Length: 421
Image 1 (tube, rainbow, N blue to C red):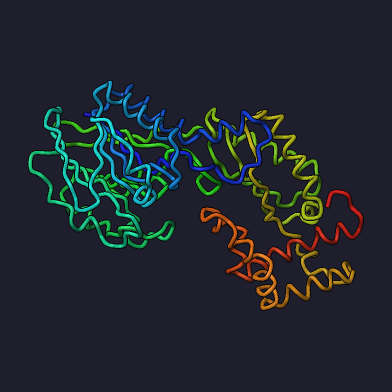
Image 2: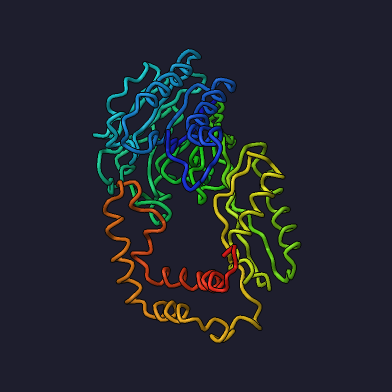
């Protein structure tokens, strides 16, 4: 008996921070979460899965969109035609979503209540199955939902469906926290978890698994994304295989420039890094964040001429993979060699540079300037944009100071009349 465990679909989540010039690229990225879900349905049918469990966050934001509703109904109907059942819970993104509440689900699909835990039994399968779960209510869910889940049913393979951060996880907002050992001693054979976007098999006796999300949405959600295909035999022995469903793969490309002295060497290193990224994408389009590391005499050149570097990188990307590799960002983490690290201020004695350093050295002043310039802008933004990374500067004057320090070479280059500053 086979089933698929998936979570965090985030249908129509906007994939972030990509400046795409081609309409075809924009459309491919816009549809990525839908296409990943369609792949999940394809595999469920191909594998003859008995059912699919969805552990929360089917939607992304409360933006009523009939196209999403039609798409979802069509995908669930495809499963229904093949006799595949679907059991799901609402996560924190679904709980107050008007579309979630209004959507008419086909009769092969059951959404668990948010009032108390429920149990669905499948007695007509080769292995009798009991699935236990509870949806989120609107608003933050800070209580331990798992504590109220029912005891395991004797003679059934018991599955717990839970959207949770687990106690102590700091990568996501804390929702429905519970302890790993608490789940392990409940007597269930498999815990299908959602909310954390990085897949993880936490235990195998019993199986406690985060499937992760089905499609990476930004540069922090790198690598293969998908779901687990789980097989249970008559003795309730479990095997689980991760299957990648992502349509666009996010990758972080680390390039070590330690000791390099010539721009041609920089170009060759970047070319090698992007070529490997294409291999790691397994034939998919990829969005890459390029990170340059290491002490090198090229540090100042990179800092002073970011546009020139970006143009070189874009040309390399086009040469390697055409439209199938997109550069999300170039992060320069290189450092100047030790002999240059303490270069004196005489090299940039321009009055403007003096003012910049004066501001940089006064954190209070930095904070005041940021609040004056950015806070009015933040208040005018829609809710989903108020947490943009750039606005984190409002809360961290130290981070703003570091960015100003990094801008010094570019300012110096502009003052020197260099075209590419």
